[in-house]
Length: 246
Image (cartoon, rainbow, N blue to C red; front, side, top):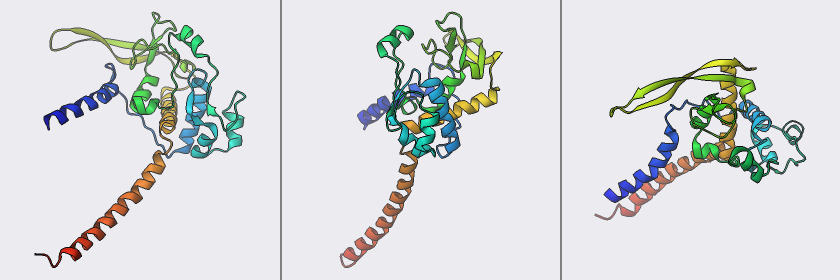
């Protein structure tokens, strides 16, 4: 039993490390997988701001259209800016070798990023870019320090200035951490509007990571009801078989 508990602990620890991040507290992403309007806005943000670098290799345009309440024609006219067909996967045209030269690493495919990192991490990441002249693109990130990604949504959010604080742990070690932000340069959105937009974007990425989420929940209810009914039938059957055995 002790060995089993130790093994389970090692399985859980990596997930906890991803959830906790490098020190900045994670924000709760207010996502709603049933909100088609939010998913549509998130898809629009993704293709306009993210797809230039990041692909969704396991997601097809027409599957997305069907799931989030759009027609193939709407997707073709508004969400496809290349020569891709509506039945194609959501690839981008950035050569990976050149991307490594530009950013130091090829931008990852984001099909499963919400499942691997968690929606709260993604939401926090998109909200915590701040000015840092020492970085190649002039911005750093509190959730992912020294990230290679530039703040591509700065025109929407504006630029933030980080508020740092020196904290001392129980052993007397001092560390400088980001405790908040102040707006240095406004963007085209107010801060509440930007937070809502990032919730839409994360909502869309969460859907992409598990397109069958709502269907799985719907089927799960019927499975539980079936098992409950089967339990009653099996119990009555057991009583019938064993009623004369004493």
